[in-house]
Length: 138
Image 1: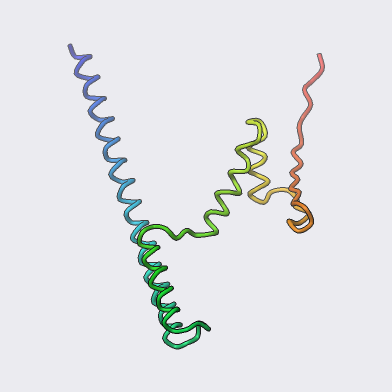
Image 2: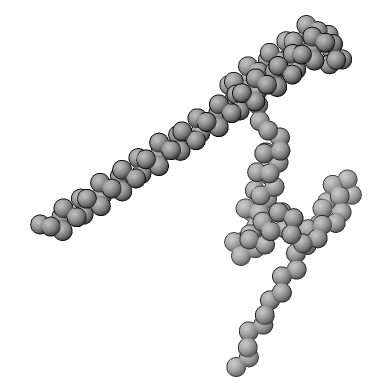
């Protein structure tokens, strides 16, 4: 009988921990969204100031319209950080590699090894030399 109570107690604790983890995750996502929104509002204020002072090189009305549209799109979550997307794509390239080669691929994409070539020249070659100790002969 005591074993059943201990099992139920462990389940209760694990459910409570799981629920707490979900709440913390939701709070972190909410805080990140608020941070992005305040960043978008700051960007809007800078853009608006540039429009009003005519430093944007655009017609004032068109400039203000574009700044407002960008803020609205940011509120809907439609604007994305190009650098973050680049980072994601950079590591996604390694997913097509065989499982045995993925760790080395990620290391190369994170800047280890040497890089040569260019996109304009037809491609970038990333090389990472990993010494391997041979197995002893029997």
